[in-house]
Image 1 (cartoon, rainbow, N blue to C red):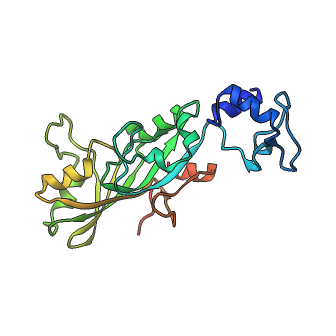
Image 2 (cartoon, rainbow, N blue to C red):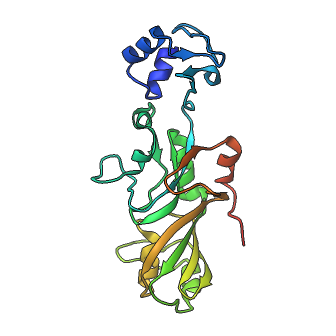
Image 3 (tube, rainbow, N blue to C red):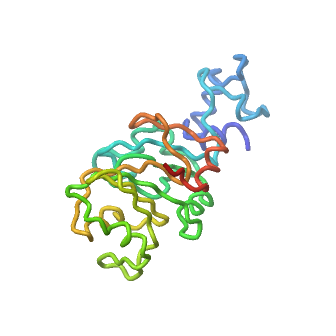
Length: 237
């Protein structure tokens, strides 16, 4: 792929704007030598205004989604794309969230521009575990773990029972729930079906991938070894 098209596809500007960047000498190699549009240079050796070029297509990003942001491009109010550099909105292929977290749910959110990777993560056949920690309005009854693990639990308006889920009690009103599917507001609806209400909800891991110390609102690209962890079982405390 020619450099002008490559850089334009990463959202740095139109092809005309990128061509102007070349003429202005803003695109260089790591040693500061000016590059030209017809040069053949490895992706990792390209700099724009002395900054490394964004990762190529096929990326997976991890974000610690803060409360109040929605997983949308067009929603009124704060959206998760506002937390990324503006050029990430116009990458080609487009960057999409891998599933969604609602406005009042925080925690680990993934993005990718790789359609096959997105499908592999969210497909029920992959059985990728998503782990949530919930703070509840009322004490747990004591039978939630058995109900959630039964594989027969039905949610209102659903036609198929839920896949078995694992509940770990962290306190009278705190619990960790591991799911292998992602139905609409699933965790909140599961606890609502037991007569309880989720006051706070955070996704803490996808597979064996965790956020570590990533602050709320921050993000970073994942390395191949980290992407592989998405498809491994989550760590057990």
